[in-house]
Length: 459
Image 1 (cartoon, helix red, strand yellow):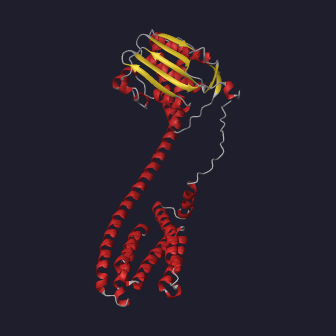
Image 2 (tube, one colour; image 1 turned 90 degrees about the vertical axis):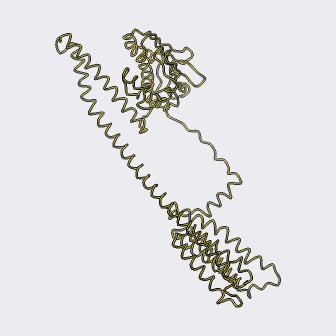
Image 3 (tube, one colour; image 1 turned 45 degrees about the vertical axis):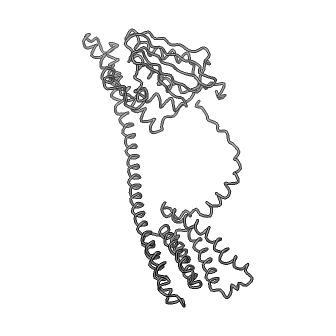
């Protein structure tokens, strides 16, 4: 029976006081779902934020605050009417800022600022030098809220309206507006040039983003094709290989008749290399499944001593062929039964033990288990082999990596065994570490969570 995982639910914690205004701000400024492109969403959010601040401040400053002056007559002040209409237009612009037509709202807001500024100059001509500066702010906002052509059009409208003020405001001359108008014009040119550069950069970034998205999509498709290819080749290669191995075993057992000694040696080599090729295919398929996230662990209770005895029977033949001493031990502090994926755990231990035998010419190989804590246990594989240099003790866990080319030629292999071992250990919520010294041997330690039927309570 596979392990069932239970999840403990926690009661949601109450939001801190400072999260309330943050959530309110997002609720007021976040654009609607109809606005999808990132640049348009940024502009719509900026417009909404501007109006959320400008509407209450403008209402208070232009409509409410003057009413506290007893001598003020709002119905006789043309600026009061202008400000009132402007606030209504800004509210409409805010409503549009949350929709796909947010650019119309941006144009309304910017024109409202322009008109309010120009009316203020007409009402208070003596403040022309400072009031026209607000046109610069209006053009700057346009560069952030509108495309480049919109900024240019608004700039031309503002400059033309400001230049026409002397013709409509009594007592105002062209000399009164020439200096501030020149400042507005020069500043506007700088803003437009900067907006053009920024727009070109955004176009380049968007193009690179599209190319990156296409490359990612192509990589995913290539990965899917690779998986399909490996799955197909697995079947196509395994079928003839299993037939070759089967017939070779029939010939080795003499069931097909007696064969000469020289032919028997050839059959042995065929059988050995066929099994080796089958193991290489299995390694490639395993690493492909792990990368694709298609490896599922089946945790069941198993007897630890029997498990280690099977490991010993599998490895002993390889060790005896090289006259190596093989020692297998089980820590008495460990429970008799452990819960885990026995097949994948066996794959981990056999990978490490086979490497230990392969890279050890004389001496011993030791496979042991031990308890490392209340909730952890370890599998330790030690050898007296050639060892691993310090600089290579991390890269050996990478796919297709061995210590160097000499090692590859002398000992063979694809360099997938340790990569698979580490990935499987991580899937089991464990890890693998190595301690080694060239010429003295290596020690590989697999640390895993200690799961027992009593702890799991499901068997």
